[in-house]
Length: 318
Image (cartoon, helix red, strand yellow):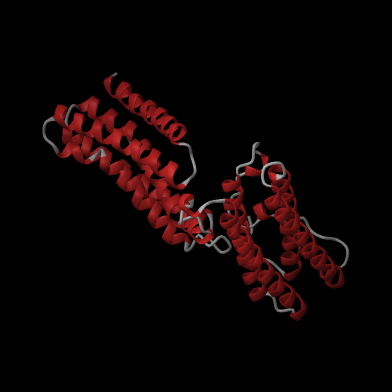
């Protein structure tokens, strides 16, 4: 993947063309999926799609004038910093709340792209067009946010569904949750293997402590190096890495600290209870912030956690 700051003006325009084409097709899919139940909203997305196509034509005209006919294939997945899009437009029936959330994120992200691209450009014509498109994307973002006023009564709206809040989730909650899941699950096997192999609380504590800190360092660096956050608004990669690393440590230390209790049996019982609470907390967070159904989240987390837990016990007891 290439860093955004490394793109030339030709590559910036090629990427912008690709983004506008993708957004237009997604909005068409939204319109088609909402056509039967939400005709007014379907028309809104048709209009937004038409505007995106107009933006693409303006970009194509400028690109042709500046760089000729050949447009290099540069997609959002080739550049560091873009939000991974869930293909909600493929689901049927299409949920209006999921559509609204996706549209808000798309427009907020595209707006950020044009603002930064305009700052990076040195060509006057390119900079002017990119600035105009940033203003147009701000209007689209407002339209997407306004869907909730038309479609939902105020008493059922969640006040925390704005686009910036969702970007905050990507910046803090997502890396923190990834760390908590890794720390809570990956340290189970070495901790309980050592516990059942030695039957000594202090030895189990040392192994759990080492596994928790080691996993925290590994996960922290992995998150920090995965995405520089230049386009997504996910913030500093080192902040995300710190959050991820700390939560990984917390996830592992939660069921490690009970082994400071001298009684091995009591420590194991307390640690096992904390494991259950950790897995339940992860399931709730995934349901609350990541739009995962509670039953599905609990099943996925519990099954994975129990399998790792039993693996540690079986290896330690052998």
